Figure 1 (cartoon, rainbow, N blue to C red):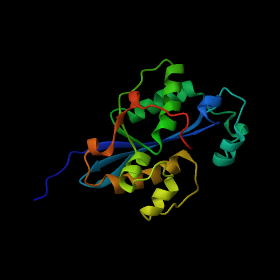
Figure 2: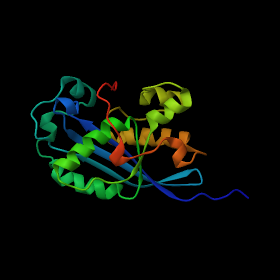
Figure 3: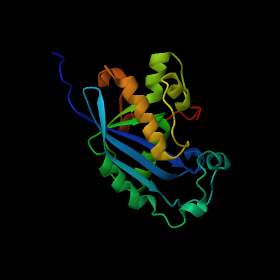
Length: 199
């Protein structure tokens, strides 16, 4: 008889921003999809999706071209101070999964410090790093990895909840049969951002 595995709570998370943080970029969208994962089966427990009104008036043209979230769309949205506590409560106690985690986690940690909130201690799995381990290639884009696993994108790109769903499908295919320690998981507090990372 096959040994049953422990249930894990997995949160796939994603951000959209006004640009790079080094240029004063801010989070303008936070998304997360929470799953129960046991015996190779994933079940959705909940979804989190919020748009955020930034303090900055500057929107990087490249970021705007990618996520198509313009300042007018965000005029009446809540500030990060209102959204972030909700988000942190939603992800509490879960294993976080992010594609190219350094980028998103760096933004979220900066917002946590700005809001004077406690930095969580979640484990974080980066699907890009998992992909580099499996395919012996660095800096794999989400679309490339989805293609490798024949995962079809049913909706548009660069909306946080849509990217969460796609990253989740990818993670559950790659994670099957592996232990957390084998997935190159890191602690939320300890992930380092490399300025020369190609996004």
